Length: 134
Image (cartoon, rainbow, N blue to C red; front, side, top):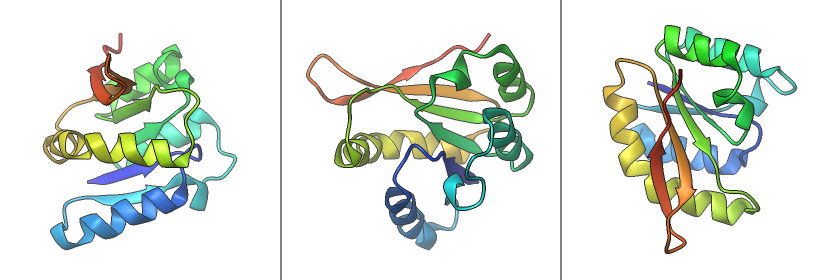
């Protein structure tokens, strides 16, 4: 399974996740900034869809725009929206890693479209919230 992080994430987080996943051989992790810098949201989501992949993004447009939702639903794309504002790279790392084991299960068994939002729970910790794409 291919997982793509958009250009709003540190490529070093992406490289580290890819290295950690290599021994298991089930997930490849890519930074879109390495090969799609400046691409539109539609171009990114089509690339992810063409690869039957999962997209991590901080861009709210991905789950709000009708066209993008339609592509996601029709192509078996996974979407993980990082919904925590005002975070630095270390906070991104912390929240993504904290949820990686849960997300990893969804990524590996993915047979249909799914969407999650990483949010803060009432205690300031990261939590996963399912998003319904209509």
